Image 1 (cartoon, helix red, strand yellow):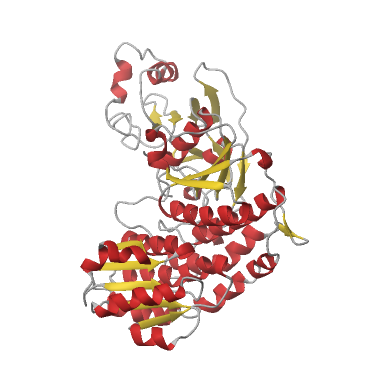
Image 2 (cartoon, one colour):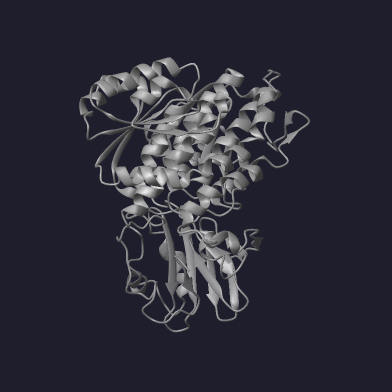
Length: 499
């Protein structure tokens, strides 16, 4: 079980007294014996916590009784409740193979684990009755199921994941969301997120502004609170996080709430910290995602943002083309159709696995897809890659282009198509090595690109859901062909719980 410690662990395991007391290493457990610890470790811990600054998630072992004291602040901790054992983890997926019953600890709560069970108290020592959550994910969902890696499995799970995100949310040509806010009073939206979720946030900005004409800002969660943002009470702050535990996103959420904004979360993990802190939210229901590099959650975030955009328009009395609701239901089928090309993309990956730099270019809704494609390649193949709006390429990055620079173009036949062709001609003139993602064959593209990957045709606002697929597969196959650990790339974690 990843990142877990079992109650009654032997001396020398996590929390034995020889480890650092906090994540940043500025306090040690032996300090509790310096005038604080007097045969009552629980009392000593409560007193010591008043001295500690910053975020922490701690398991403290009582050497004499073998009890374990669990505490947290701004860092996730869950208790997995087994038949005769208790598991401690930062993420629910780590304990699913042992139990489906979990308790989510909140800040400034103390869990005391004994051989006979557990109790949960506040810092004053008062008992707390915490809800035990039943996780609906199955063991099969956290196994590879015949796939070489979890990441590949999760790429292929996207049709089902999207259907789960959509389920029950489109009824009689209307979007139905259980959002407990008066959206008519919202005059501005701020979306904040990190990593892949930030890329989906950029797509959300396009969609919300298109359908509602409400101004949308997108912020990196890690930067949001440090610039003292202007946040009003008629603003809606949307926070996006697959795990629901991302430390920077959680900090941004707290800043937004402090300034009086309404808050909405888009998360996958039911019962996670963000889902408990926001005013309202949309669950993705994408199922567990084990691979560190997110894939299906990204697609489901886009679906959730499309649904929210249309729902927001409904609430405000603004019309939209109902054909969107028809086309979005077809997306899972189109994804299944495209994924049959995985072996062909592996052949392309063989040609590019030894290159050192990549450039990803897209326009409009597909610029964020270019960013996501570059991020995936960096994360799991350790190849330097950059995503840019295609037009910005000539304002600097084109200086890097030569025969050793693969350039991935996302070029659907939309309103930007002719401009994209012009950008491709500029790259070709510099001997750039072009891979083109297209949805319709074109003789011009055939002449310009070295390799072409064709995705099914859909309406423009849904195109990111299909155009991201070859980028996910290309990154996966390159990393796999290089013999790298695709599911656990170096220096990365699934739930980023530090700021």
